[in-house]
Length: 196
Image 1 (cartoon, rainbow, N blue to C red):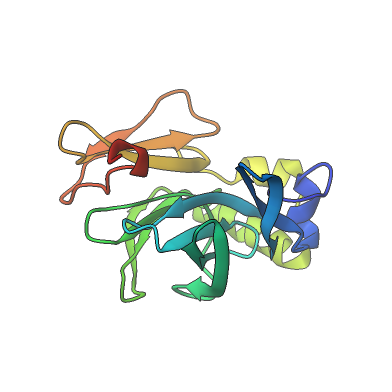
Image 2 (image 1 turned 135 degrees about the vertical axis):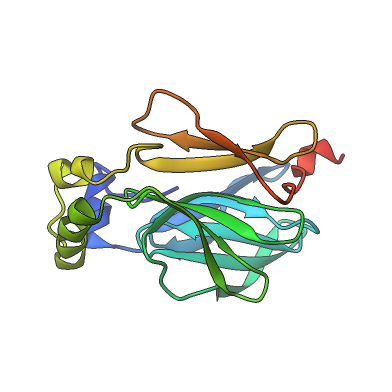
């Protein structure tokens, strides 16, 4: 759950950490982790030892150790603050975590060593400067948010590796009308449910 605030856009200005992760299993529904700032996508690493969490408004990736449905040892993965708002993410076969930065419209990767690599920049520097001023001040409006986007994949929100060799990267967009894609030099990590 991203936030308990309604509408959710209020949380972008308040930056309240009221997001949580729920688990549905044979015991029912329960919250297993909370206190996230703009909880977004979650994803396991290849060995299912860590659950990675996008905290969009905090501009960071958090991870929690996982065992038998329990989450513990929470820590920030990579930089304490990214350049923009992380939204979608996926691992490649080498453990690099590819991340879309929505509004800024950049694609980055965090290596297992914590280095940030810029893979694609489709940002609008002028609109992003205005956006950043309002984000820091807590005065963002829907109009300011709407003005900040690139042209290739406006409001780049998700990515996945596809194709028979998992070397085609597809980018999802909240404001576009197509799905851009490109060939990757490395394959993606197969999804957990594909391996079962």
